[in-house]
Length: 459
Figure 1: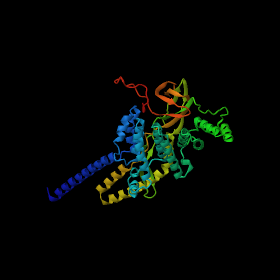
Figure 2: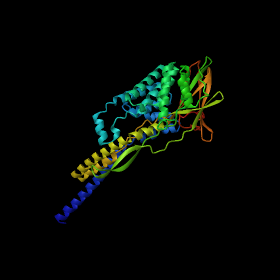
Figure 3: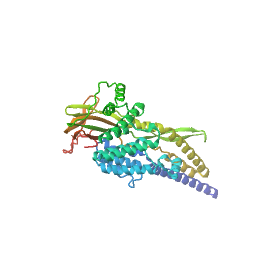
Figure 4: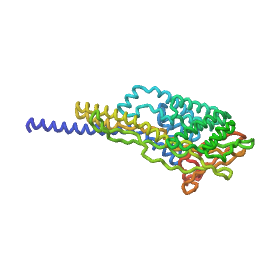
């Protein structure tokens, strides 16, 4: 074989080797980046498996392994919720307090994070939570304090939530349920003037934003507002609201020495999980169709079972006071224009870097192409251990101990699960029963000591 043929043969082998090396490097790069860029939504689905099978302790164990240095807001929120679901109210507030400080620290976003979010993807930005999530953080800390028998600390949480809403400065950011819970806590402490103010605000928010994203004004709140107005002898306002509510037959009831009140709060279902979607959009800047990724709620809203409280041979239907599913979808809808604008800007930057790399050689160009494709991921973070809805009912009961049963009822009217608890009613005082439910717990035939028909989250 002459020298020319030998040279061509060697050159062909070299080119073949280069192509194999490029393919191997590309595959390795893809594998590493895909693993490192798994979305939070993927993790959330795995973490919530325990909740869907009635084993919150399993979900908690998974959550506790994430973020051991306590730097991620979302990890702290999930840990806090799962701890309270398993009855660890003090531990829950401990990590919730960490989340509050993390959120405060994120108000000054670092330049490094902003650059990374523009050039790589939005998961590099610190997650401070949507505004409704920040407010619910205070609400669940307040519920923890209530269950720990510390109502004054619960009141402090409501004051902090109020400060946060006022700092935002725009009235639509007020949360109806936060105002309602605030009023309930004030009333439980005998601060009736403040309770009335909160009930008024809650009703206005429900009324003005009913269906987008809040439910219709609950009847239980309307009765609370009327009762407070009657107690404060504000007759004109009382009569005006009676007419507005079409509740002319309503008569305010005030607990006597031989009765008290039970407030039931049920966290029903699970909040939706964000998934990732992508689309090619035309960029006038580079005259190309570019791929952008963005978060979506792919699964439709789940239908919840009805829940009623049974006590002393009477049943009381629970009402929805916070629709977290609606809040989550509404919040994402409001953020979507900004998300898409940032995604397109990021796609243009990646396209330009890819073009520059291709000018330097095929290997560099291919690796940059793979990197850009794989790292374009949507930010699917959200507080997915929240319930789908928060439901509430208030019941006047005689002083003493009572067996209360929350009955989960399907569309056919059959009770599919129950939550049982003994409550103590004290004269002229408010007692609380706060629970979580998301799925019936199947009977464990292999474990004869397993409890049957108990709540999936709190036993």
